[in-house]
Length: 428
Image 1 (cartoon, rainbow, N blue to C red):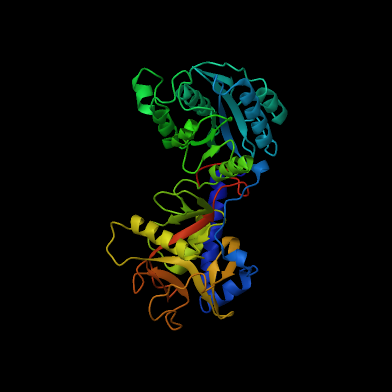
Image 2 (spheres, rainbow, N blue to C red; image 1 turned 135 degrees about the horizontal axis):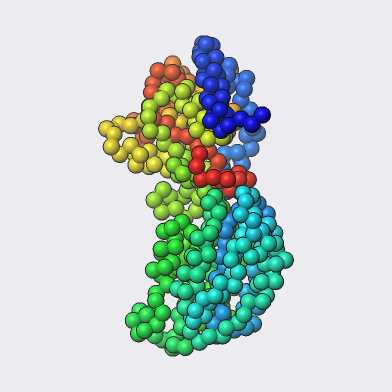
């Protein structure tokens, strides 16, 4: 018998309500018994005290990729063959397909550009790795004396209009120069574009990046080629500018693909090295909730928000500071001091603090990784559940309190979508 999505959702809702009511009946000693009996405690090796990294299994990538390749005189025919060999090596461990159905595979399109751009093959052309390799080594060498990167990027952007709704998009740009090969290299970038050359590719590159597509640039240099191609880096997304002569270039591009394929669903933000200008991201997503709840209620609410979600852990000082900055932004209209629940609690049976983890797992609290308690805390008589409260610490200190009677905002955490965690939708 087929059960409708609505009926299934109602069933899950009532099951959740029953679980909460059943648990409330035994509120006495609740945390010590529930956490001790149901939680799984992993090994406490040092690797567990690191925040989750983005998973990177090339065979499980799910991206829509357009490779835009310079086929001008500056590239040379031999250079075009070398680029094809580089790409054939890059895509070998990946699952290449042209399907539009949901799945963990990449779709690849090819664009060649010189004085204009040609779509060699769209996202539906290359059914497998063998057909892609054949396409790479049969790209026509135009040998044009002019180079129109803007046209190449526009063609790539047009191809991506048919991308899968759940797959992130990438433009991988190979070029041997930044501007027209027929002009002398002593002419400046500004003089070239004002003297009647092609339009500045920066404008279309910025437009593409603002739409959510990442641009990876590969400056292809052949000795004794000059260093002008380094300007390609101005077109790339942050930290995605590489040179063909870089050590381990294949590994660097693969890692860039994995970074693109590591993302959060709508309404979640990704934990990163910096909140405002992230350069590197972690495989974790955070969500600051919009209404107050007790720690106990928040403990149930987070898993109900998304599969595998839980009250956030703060395994490092950087994570604590990142969340505090995020909370300040989210609560900017509220009066100070502000406070919010996190996933740290005291287990009476184990006589120790533990972090919440996905699917009822727990991780022992390590004071060496985060020792940021407010003055006078932890206080055994105050309660078993921990929140971040404005106090003696400039970025909000840890403070334990009652699990049931102190409502405040709270922060949920869930694993990012990546090669280990396939997401078929950007919605929760």
